Image 1 (cartoon, one colour):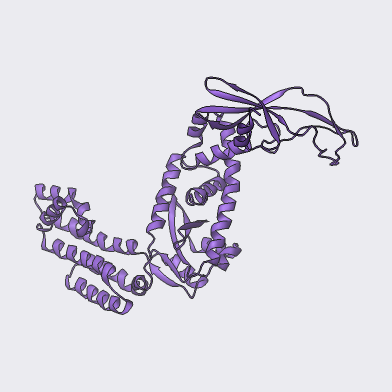
Image 2 (image 1 turned 120 degrees about the vertical axis):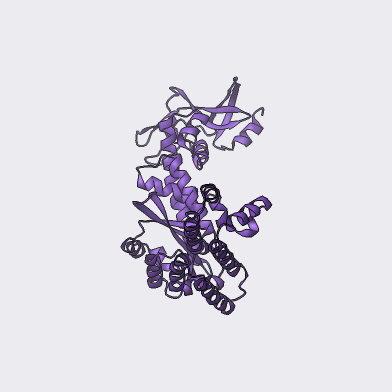
Length: 409
C-alpha cells in the first residue's frame, strides 16, 4: 500500500490513510476508520448502520518535517437499530468536537513548562484561550501525578533527609514554605504560610506527611521550623543550614567594614565601599586580581583584617572538620577566637552561634545543606516574574510542583 509506512509512523491503528496533500506550510492527511461501523455507546449493541458523512473536520496533529500536520477525519453519523440512538463516530486519538489531537495537546502543554502560555501560543499558532485551557487541564493532571509520585518515593526512602525553607509570594508580607526531599532531589509540596499554626494545620491534614520518617531535617535558624520538626520528627537530627549560618558571620564582617570606612578619607571610603562584596567571597575562590583588591581593603583597618581571618577560619571549620568530636573542639576554639577580637558585632554573632551550637555542629553528623532548595526558590521567583504572578492559587501551586520536578514531569 502507498501509505503503509505513514500509517506506521502515525500509529493510529483504528484509522487508515486514504490521501495525503502537501501544501507550502502544512500537510493534510485524510484518514478513514478501518472498521465499517462502531458499537453503540448507549446499549453497546453492534446492530449499527451508517447514516452518512455530512462533513469532514481537520484536526491538528504533531508537526513533521517543518510542516504542521492536519488529520482530515470524517464525521460519520451512525444509527443503532436496537435502541434507535443517533451518534457520531468517536476516535480514541481526539476528543469529540476538539480541533487538536490528544498527542498534540499534551505536547504543547509540556512545551509551556519553563516558559509562558503566550509564547507557546504564538509559536504553535494556537489561540491563546485554547492554549491556556489545554495547559491548565494538563497541568492539573500532571501536578497530581508528580506530587503523588515524589511523596511516595519520600515515604519509602531509606535515610530520608528533608529540607525546609520559606520563599516569598510578596516579600515582607506573604510567604509559603517549601518541603524538599534532599536525598532524592525532589520538591514535595508547598505549605501555605510559614507560621507555626500554618505548619501544624498542614501536618494534621496531610496523611502522607505524617508517614514521612526522616533521619535529618535541614533548615535555617527560624525557631518555628525547629519547634515544628521537634514535635513531628522527634528522632530526626536538626541541621542548621550552612549558608544561612555563614550569613551571620558575613553580616558581622560587613558591620565592622561599615564602622571602619566611616573613619577613612573620602577616597578610601569610596574604594572600600565599592569592593565590599569581595570580602564575603571565599579567599580560595578569589582571582589573583581580586585577592590583591581584598588585601588592599584589609590594610585600611586592623579590626577588619582580624574579622576577615575569623570568617575564613569558619569556612575552614565547615570544610575540614573530620568528625563531630573534633568539630565541637574546633568550634569552641573558633568562638574563643571571636571573643578575643572584642568587637560588639562579633559578640552579637557569637550569641546566635552559641544558642544554636548543637544544630550547627550537626552538619558534621550528616553533611547536607539547603543549596538545592535555594536553587528551587530562585526557580520559583523566576516563575513569578515570568507570569507577573498569578491570582489562581491552585494553578500557582500546581505550576511550582511541575516546574520544580522537571526530571519527572
